[in-house]
Image 1 (cartoon, rainbow, N blue to C red):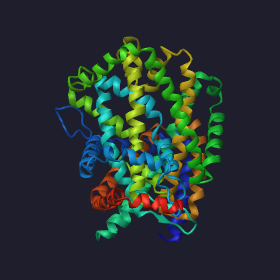
Image 2 (image 1 turned 180 degrees about the horizontal axis):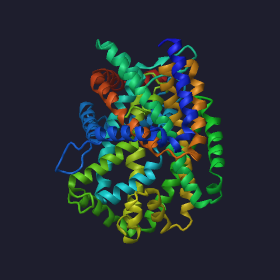
Image 3 (image 1 turned 90 degrees about the vertical axis):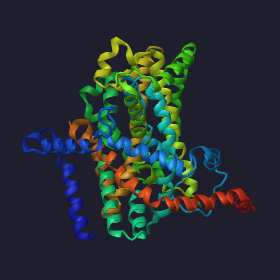
Image 4 (image 1 turned 180 degrees about the vertical axis):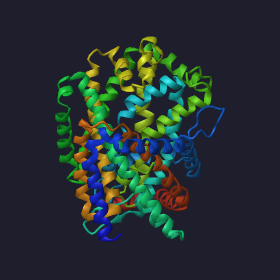
Length: 510
């Protein structure tokens, strides 16, 4: 791309950022209506019912389900076989001093987790159980299990095709394995087009769902407990903007250090509250588990029919872990590992922690407390106010939990924002060049402030759809390049069985 094109494209994007505050009046000049039409078109494609008459099976959910199941069988249930070895990698047993990268394996994992462990774990699960019934929890766990294989595949490819720029920064993710991988297959032009498409989708998703939505939801939760911010929303936006800027201006290393500190604490606080409620209702746990399993196959839920319950479970898992979307591969590509599959093994823990552990714990709390089908909470269910429903569930046991939930929502939103800023910045850099990377960070921080004072519902919906759209080019690449992953996996497992990898560790220690 020429410098002129980069210059004009960058200035056009910056102009868009400056015009965003006027979105409230956008209906007058047709922008709001246009976005509404685009949203409707994208939604009609992504959520097209591929099983008419059998329940609502959105195309995008089916697209991700098939990919997850296929990759699990393709790699011989890698999500079961290598969990133990992955833990050894995370704790540093197989660290190679000469491995190139910007962050450690664990930092890359926490950075990716900080993007996926978010408001969906609090709000989305409550809605899934309310609509699909307790049985949705069972299928959510199943989906999380198969999604681990998708994450392994995309992260391994990101490590294989990553590029080290002259300034030392890593450029990796679906952009790289789409362009380079397709070029190896003799489809260079197609790969480049898909790579740029993926990058543009990521930029839009980062500014919208990874920024505007997070600030909006966090501010709503805080305003409930601290009315001061209802009168001064701009102040909340400025506080969040400063907090985000302090971290993201420093790039991936500072983001990784922040995520390494925030994610464990954030997960510990939330899971501690879940465990406390489960212990208080320990006598009800067997009945709740029995209900989850029985309703998974014989549902009586609002969704109606087994297909409806399966879709609710798989949809929650897909949207929560982002497996198959390709976003987390950008963070994992920066990890310093000697063998690409090693980081792929580490990535197995991402859907496991996010979906199988955290989402399941939330679902158990919702089921045990019974708020999902309580008549007095029907209005919350109808309005899809999942966070409020979760707060009611926790508040029924811990009276002061709404305050803790507000803090958790802010932490979840903040951690998601700093990670998605990196995804957007790397994608921006891929399209416009390294010299403009700082400009994106500035624009991203500006959007944090705008989110606190701007009504932009259509932009939020649009950016959310952009994130889901990322799965199209990403999964095409996974199918096309799966052979490379298979060869690398066989080679690595051969060295592991022969003891060669242990000999490498001994040699490094000496």
